[in-house]
Structure formats: C-alpha cells, structure tokens
Image (tube, rainbow, N blue to C red; front, top):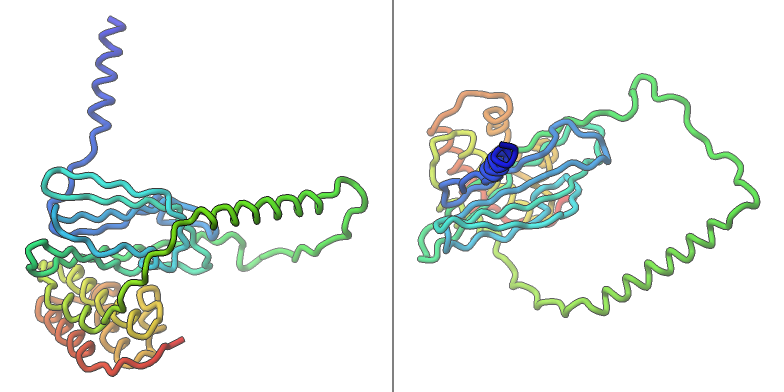
Length: 286
C-alpha cells in the first residue's frame, strides 16, 4: 500500500509540473513581477515572456525597454509547440526611487517569413509601489563617523589584495573575449515607425490599441532624439514639441479611465502618423 501511495504522489507531482500551453497569438508580450510592492535597492523577480508564430522573425530584445528598472539577467528559456515559440527572460530587478515607478508598455513586433505585414503587440504597463525604508516624518538623527580604530588586523592590506585579484580577473576575461561584431547599419527611425503604424491591427481593446500606438510614438522619439522616452512621463516629455499633446488624451483613457472607443483610437493613429511624417527631427533633448 505504501508503494502504491508513493507512485500516486509521484504521478500527481508530474502532472502538476506540466507547463501551461503556449498562448495562441502571432505576437504577444507580457511582464510578470514577483512583487508589486518593492523596497528601494532590494531585488525582486521579473519575467518577460514573448510569443510569436514559428517561422516569424521576432524584433531584437533590449533591456532598456524595462527602464527605469535596474536589471541583472538570470537566463533565457525558449520552448515550442510546433506552431508557436515562447521566449522567457528572467531577471533580478531593482528600483532606486522613493516614488512609485511605472514601466511603460513594452512594444514587440514579429516579421512573417512570407513578407506580409508585421504583427505588433505591447505589454501592459507595470506599476510598482515603493515601500519607504525611512519614516519621512521622523527620519532620526544622522549617523556621523567616529574615530578610526587603531591597531588590529590590517584590513586595508586585504582590501588591496582583493582589488588586485579582481583587476587580474577582469584582464583575463577581456583577453578571452571574442572580437566584437561589426556595427549594425544605422536605423531609420521614421521609416521604422511608419512601418509599425501601417501594420498595427485593431484588437478591439481600446487600452491595448492605445498602448501599442503610444509605444510606437515613444520608441520613435527615443531613436530620433536620443532621449529615454519609454521611461519618462508625459510631463517629462513636454520639452519635445508635440509629444505631450498627443500623449495627454491617452493618459486620460489609460490611467484616469476616461471613456473612449474605436473613433478615438483611429484619431490617435492619425495624430501619431502625422507627427512621424511631419516631424523635422530635432537634436537631442536632455
């Protein structure tokens, strides 16, 4: 009887270990955080999952898309089910801010192998609440340094040895590093943004459609002007002419829950397309 019970437990464990099926989508991306309330400087688990149809070419991944988070990559895992591919990227993520942080919608595109229209998707914004480390009303007295201790173990000598060892290790890694690949040809931000706009398909979800359109706009400004537009708020982008005027109505829908429908989505599509076509392409903005 004990042997039978053990076999049943193993069977149940094997069933529970089965992973969920891959989502049925030509292009999809989602972000998952282990915690939505985080402490400044304390790590939490972050996962980015992308799905595309087998045979399609996915857009390159860029950790900068998850700004303002500070990331340490833990690994990439890919699996297939015969029709689609799922890519899972895992990170240790950190926030260094005393205010709540929002990771903007992350865009994703998959290019069909037959040359047909791109499939465009975007994740939902990831909102993180910051748990303060110090009571703002009673931070306590400042801690001042005391006198340096005299005598004892020469810790400075041990520190010097560790620094030398670290330097030697870095030199060894640099010597074994393969030659850098030739630089990629320069990208045309305007042509790329217009191509993405022409291939965005209406999903019927107003929030998702607006997030995809604003993701294209932010990505275009980031490439054209060299500013972290994906990580900045609408107010912080007021110095880029025309951008805040387009994003403000979208914020009212996405964050203030103002009612909107397909007509507003179509109007947003036209405004973003006109901005990309008519923008003169100014210099960098600090």
